[in-house]
Image (cartoon, rainbow, N blue to C red):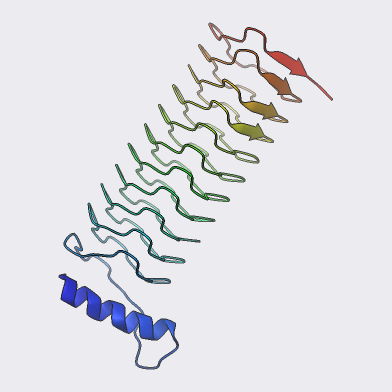
Length: 246
């Protein structure tokens, strides 16, 4: 689909959003849009299943409730998008650039988001079950009450993130940087956390039962009201770390 064809679809979708009977809800399923400018537009409630929007500009656009199931978004610049309740299940999003985006309550189940940039994003109540998030940068993002069950965050940069209420059951975080993070009321059951950097993290009211913390780096932090049953802490640097119960 070229720019002219896309603009025609967008115009009809805009009318539909306005409640104009002449409008048509956008359905771009399966289209290749790699030559299209999708920046600063409103495709709220649009269907974009299996579209290819690789390496294009989508910055500043609104995609609330949009369906990107199976989409290819590799290397796309989607800085500052608004995609509340967006559906990105099974999407291919390697190297996507999405800083400062609002992705509240979105679904990234089984999505591939490797080597990506999602810094300073609102990712509250987002579902990343079984997603591949290896080596991505999430610095400063808010993940409160998000679901990372079975996700792979190997080598991810998570500095300064808020993980309050998150579930990392069976997740893989080997080599991740969690320095300066808020880790309160978090479930880490059987999580693989080898060589994770917890420097300056706030760990309170968590459950690390069965977690593998081999070689983890957490010097001088205070771990409060946290269950550490059957954890592996071989070679972990916990010098000066204190365990407190209230």
